[in-house]
Image 1 (cartoon, rainbow, N blue to C red):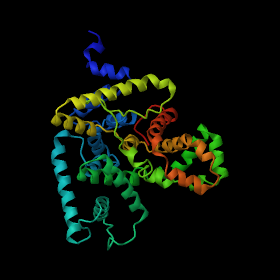
Image 2 (cartoon, rainbow, N blue to C red; image 1 turned 90 degrees about the vertical axis):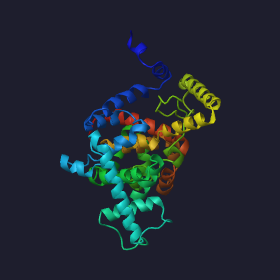
Image 3 (cartoon, helix red, strand yellow; image 1 turned 180 degrees about the vertical axis):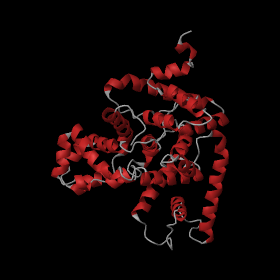
Image 4 (spheres, rainbow, N blue to C red; image 1 turned 120 degrees about the horizontal axis):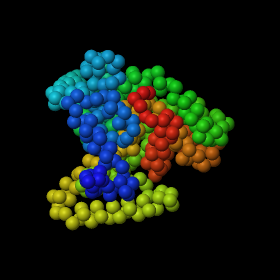
Length: 372
């Protein structure tokens, strides 16, 4: 019996129409079955492939502890340890800690029911860091603005509030610790790679005195949180009802050479819509819920790489933004206009930007490995 005949027939079909995530998902599931998760292999997988949305939170919780240099410190700082048998108990401790800190803020009347949830996360983080201001009316520090932007984006990706807090807190800690020495170097790397891809575009930016005024903080400190449009942070796309897909269907505004693929995608969408309509109400609701749970976020695909060990992906997203909107940027002659445009890029190109940025990253950095 051939290898293909042993596999699920849907796996073969979906791969033929361009979806390769099925076998990748199976590979990740094998890694996650280990009694002790292999951190290095999870990092390598996350660098090479987008994480399936149903496993993303789990993988992030394990990987975000790797900012610690020692194994003992890793176990203290990680959200979840690599040992499966400890996950339930450790998560219970995390929930208790969350409740205790939240209660403390309520007792001292630092927060109320009217406090936005992302601000609650910020004050919890500041309290645990020993940096809580005397009053919530105190002006926010630049690092607070970064935390709020990341927390807001994380809310779009994670439904559970406790998970959202811990992931946001540990992600920010990773940026402030592991990447502290790398982030200041990213603007220079951006110039270097943009020059390799389009020297004329870089020359225009320099002639407009825009290079030093580009939104580097938005790109690199906030990791594009608040830059990629809200609708692109969690774009609802069409997935197979049986749950074997975990890759987004990209914009139908593709090149003519991809017309065959576009037809296949449209047929897939029509079939799935018919399937949902033919089900009873309870099954249809379950199908819609499953589809929602399988949504993949464009920003998540970038953060997969950052969390697993490479902040350089941020450079290539920035480069691809400039390449995508080259005509528009070349028509602008002032630094202020260029910066304003780049801070509010049109949403309809965001998915293509992320995909091409990852391709650029592979092109210049080779096979992804666990390194910054």
